Image 1 (cartoon, one colour):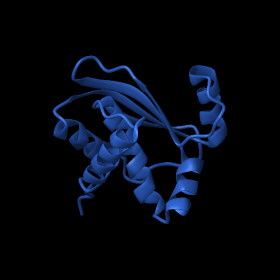
Image 2 (cartoon, rainbow, N blue to C red):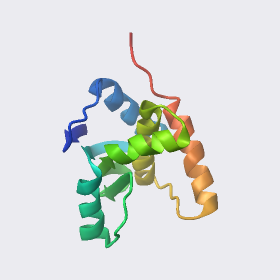
Image 3 (spheres, one colour):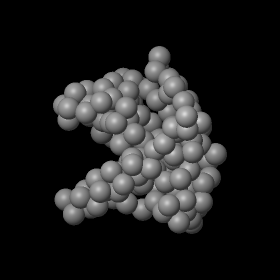
Amino acid sequence: MISFNYETEFEIDNEIAYEKWISSIIVSEGKREGDINYIFCDDEYLLEINQKYLDHDTLTDIISFDYSVGNELHGDIFISIERVKDNALDFNVDFDIELKRVMAHGVLHYCGYKDKSEADEVVMRTKEEEKMRMFHVEP
């Protein structure tokens, strides 16, 4: 089950469309959907998590904790809406596009994709683009 939690004023307009999209990403990678929680927050909230659990003292747009068991994906994905907004400006893309990229990024980590090396990063970006094209809103 995909769930959305809010620790900030931001809320997704069409949660059902996003749930279906994330589910379709999981299926397209040959995985099974478990419990995946998206937690939308601000920079301060995510910085505290970064410091407490990862011993990093930097701002970031996403932190994911992977509790997957085999091919069944489970985890918590924390997203700083402030970072996503700033990144959208920096990359000259709409906020909604950048949000989808980050949301896909989190679940792609659970599917086994990494982004620590340059080669891994290229694969991750390609997968993000592919998965973003899968997003559809029914009329």
